[in-house]
Image (cartoon, rainbow, N blue to C red; front, side, top):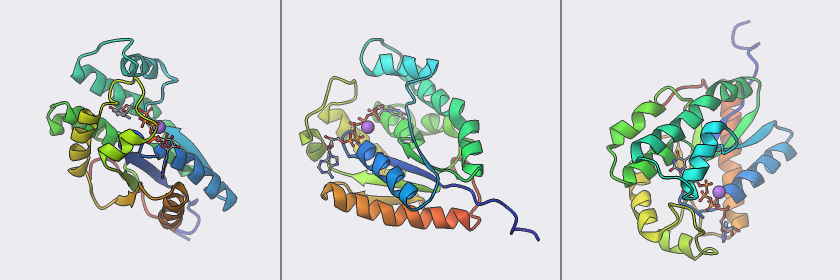
Length: 213
Ligand code: T5A
Ligand code: NA
């Protein structure tokens, strides 16, 4: 009978936040947690530096190459597009994807440089919309104190302040803001609850949608 034989899909969960907000630590903890619950989950990250496009992005971030602001923006977007169909296949086969950064990073970082926000959003239109965006909230000053920034292009306090402002205008109904200054285990606990609720909703038939809606 209709509805019942549709296989439960996985959830598309994105973690966003400033550099050093704790995304990578929490993404891997989340995947382990979901697996302990008997759920299929995979850890993904953008940029995916393993592809040809990803290697161009990596060279740019490490200052090994220079690119026009628009050009690097489109490369970040292309790097998501080249993964879109695999992402959809995985989700439809019941795998939950925990994704370290996504289109919101793309728009927040490029618009923080002064690019028009609508122009920044345009190439993201049609990518899969996350079921949940967990924003790890930390002040740029606190983030900078965490082990200090490395040598990557965007790891500068003044720029991170601008990025924080530009993230704010992207918040929508799919966002949950988590205080990233709590002890790591407390952030973890909070994320487990909101992610599990999201996975359950997707299993019950919440449909996949596209950016930006
Ligand atoms: N970018 C990315 C774009 O411009 N456009 C795009 O489209 C995309 C996708 C990529 C850069 O590219 C930009 C954004 C970025 O500048 P990246 O490889 O994702 O960069 O690297 P970062 O996000 O900068 O990763 P970081 O490693 O700096 O930060 P994370 O992952 O947020 O933090 P994490 O987990 O590595 O933790 C950082 C440190 O803090 C500690 C950890 O132990 C670690 O030492 N920590 C805590 N300390 C205290 N309390 C807690 N709760 C803590 N949680 C973690
Ligand atoms: Na990271």
